Length: 126
Length: 225
Image 1 (spheres, rainbow over the protein chains, first blue to last red):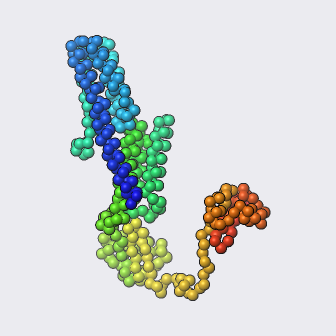
Image 2: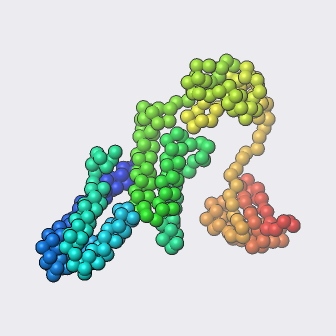
Image 3: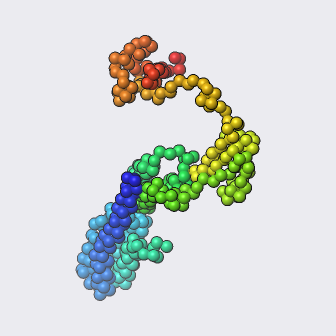
């Protein structure tokens, strides 16, 4: 019976870990998404100083918990977002408001999709 | 490359621990649920081992989940007959008093060829000599011939048998097990005496065992001995 309790313990620990990862990844993604949304508005208004500041802030938040993200998220997907940040730098330096704002919006949707993929929902289970 | 190496080691260790915790049973003697778990765990581990794009947790979490479920179900199987029947099924009699129970044969989807094959494995050629043949939950067939068809046991034949003792390994591959030496109630002086009688040393011994009746078996290293 000891092993059954061990099994139950493993299952409970995994459940707690699963919820924690879901909650933690939400809290990790929120500042990135917020900064990118603001950067999108700033880029559309051609406020490049503010755009630069916000994008750097978003990038800093994004890279701060890369190990945890790599442990739970699809590596190819993370790589695509990293490439998105690299492209954002190019458009920002070119001072192209439409392309920068569009890329910010694309990154936001990708990060939100990444967060959505971690959520315990019937759609994801199915 | 180093990434695959590290990931493989981690997943391999997770597999070993999982299998050890499931218990030591031979593959051929697995219950259906155990067989499924073994198949699943092996497949679950191989995917993240090969694909570096898949996060490590995607390999570890399913393995641990399967292990957890297996341990809980194993406990429930011990406690509840209902769960045992549900997961393992129940033994089915295929031959009773020399007659094949065809409905049970159909129910278990065992063909006549398979039944005959199982019987031949048990050295039975004539079905009418079988009193009972039972298909166990692990897929093995237990065959009980009529008592008159069975070889006589020593007790039935009235033969006096010697007591049988479990041999305890004292030296294996040149290494002395002090724990086993103590368990056998012997000491180093006894071991030196035994080796001196055989004009050999610990290093030259491949295997040395002793049982409670003091019967010693000694196998030297090398082919020439």
